[in-house]
Length: 187
Image 1 (tube, helix red, strand yellow):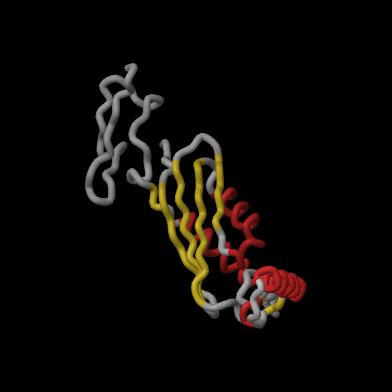
Image 2 (cartoon, helix red, strand yellow; image 1 turned 90 degrees about the vertical axis):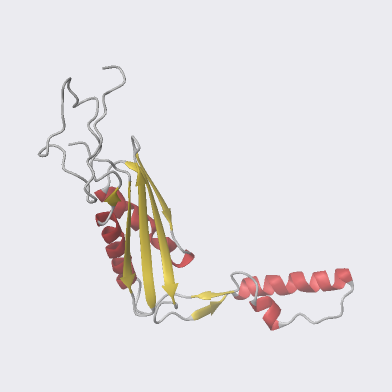
């Protein structure tokens, strides 16, 4: 039976400090194309997520969206990028003298700049986080609710003249409707 690859699935994993939400959307496509959108903290796991999805779905245009809600991972500590902070300080001092300003360059101004402060690695490693992420991805792939009742309508390859849908060959959708049978355009 022909199976449509158009569908949507969602799953989540509850962590100690929050949760990870994974959404998978797929559309029929001749080849397998996987697009993964992860938050910055989970970027090291992009290849693992891609492999997990590719192992389960062989074709289609598949988009995987991952959101991380809640606090930072347990055991993570803030880390200061001192080289970048020094470069910002120097740039602000040059701007101050070039513009003839007399305001001091404060620590809060430097710390507010992008990537000056960040979160370091978890003390316990990232194995548990990876396992939870991959479990959520697998759950989302498993829960893909295929649009069109999970099966494509009778196609030109299986259609024959005079074919009529029967209860055994054409089960209804969850809402009780029957799938449509289409005659090919050139038949």
